[in-house]
Length: 584
Image 1 (cartoon, one colour):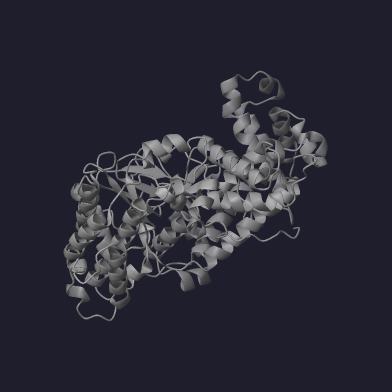
Image 2: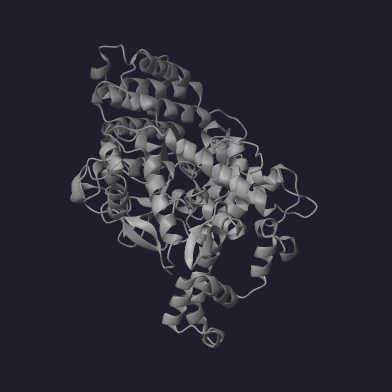
């Protein structure tokens, strides 16, 4: 591997960017219209999938900085005022539920006061700016101070901010905090009071507001209870936009009859497992932005990553000049498994030449990518597949189609990988060589693996099996099934059954949060995942590039996770004794 310039996975974290920076690199997904609606909305995705960016793009500060093609239309469409509240581990670290609620409520009201101050600032570029004279501001703040138990606050926005700041600072040492109105009352009801009071003061009694709750998975159960109850039946003055990881432990707090109803009480935006078309659109948009910030002329991603035949290595060039039928026939000459499968299907050279479009799609086109993957990794000795010590070619993991699939539409991954590739971009040809493509993806995968190794258990206090060990075992299992005796439809995904040990499900929660596992949704999947049983998952395709753990970039059939674990337990008793306390 060449020496790649290391770009950290958190370099492009939207939390660290200014509103102008967030808006400048924003590529609007097709789901942004749902998020911009006046419905409660859950934005569900792993780390780096763009949840924070989407919420921040709803804020007035970011909207006025947006210069994209759709910016003007969306600014006109978004007519609710927004309050951005990132989750804070301060909420979960409190000794009692009352103090946790007080911390949440105080920070939420602080963010609300900041938004009131922003909208009445009188600055030129303010989204939904309004006028509020000093006397009206003082009256408004006095009303809020009384409602929020902050009677000693100086009248005015800065006085409220100072009083809330002081309350938060003293929270853990004040014996009266648990009895304060911010701890006892429903925080969202207190916020709604403030919203209505402000709307009356500025003459906008029908103006809606939206509370943007980022990383809700970090919040304790007390906060979830409050939020879920509001989504189920809160005030119409306030909309909730909630970002969270793909698994919510608390959605079923009220049981199946009391929980919010998707499509009725809330809408859902999914940022993982998106359609190929949407992933291509996001990746191409971010590629365009990467070229713009470097003042490079636009070249399509497909052109930059898809080298002409004359510049490919000899093996890849020869294969590119062959038809899929030729690739299949060539594989049958060295792989007895392929030859046997062709005989069973009656796929003679003559029949291959006369297949209908549908027949060719169901056989040749479906299996050829798997054959290219196997050719990259395997030699055949006496008719048996043997793993190579190093890949024969990078073809299965390079080129626009493979790279787009591996980056999963994850903006942080896309920006990191493309930034590294562009360090080796040749302006004279407008291309990045396959070796540089492969090294950028391999470097990203290795850093992602390092992140998984130190992943903190922020989701649950229960024991969790190490995420990276679960990922590695699943990857090794899939790799062996895809590179042993030929199978035209080998497993490349897994399902969860009732026998899955609790420590494994805890690891799945953490892995979903990090993006290592992807939920394969179907029409029976719940809107918000709160139970694993019966659900189908796959590994992030990025993890399939790692040496010795390669698997193809295809969904394949599924196998139960307990079957995968059972094989590991049976092959390594030490692994069972030290890792899992379970009887399969």
